[in-house]
Length: 140
Image 1 (tube, rainbow, N blue to C red):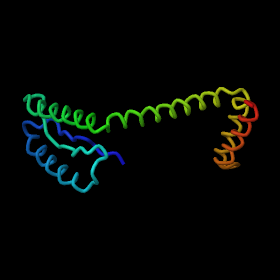
Image 2 (image 1 turned 90 degrees about the vertical axis):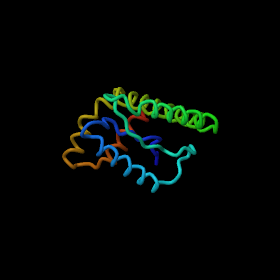
Image 3 (image 1 turned 180 degrees about the horizontal axis):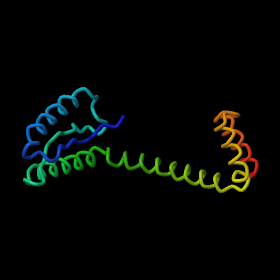
């Protein structure tokens, strides 16, 4: 599970100020229930008001502290590498999906298979298997 690195309650001004401070306290208390983050960062909770120009500098300071910490301890690079792998697999999925949906044999039988699934004549899993069998037979 990913944890937030920061929670910022905005519009903490006027009639909202007391509710924003209450929310800040509740979020701070709730964050203690979660395990430590992989990055070593302790998430911060703060409030801000763009209208009153309050809290923005403090939030930016925390962001810069976070960036410095994760770059120093290697977490930033580790996450970037993990993201690159995720992007690679997403690209593979997208290309396979495009190839599948644009396959002539699939296009020819897909409406019929979809109708069989919708009418309950065939299960979703069996339909998928049949479509994949046709697809792989025609690309190999």
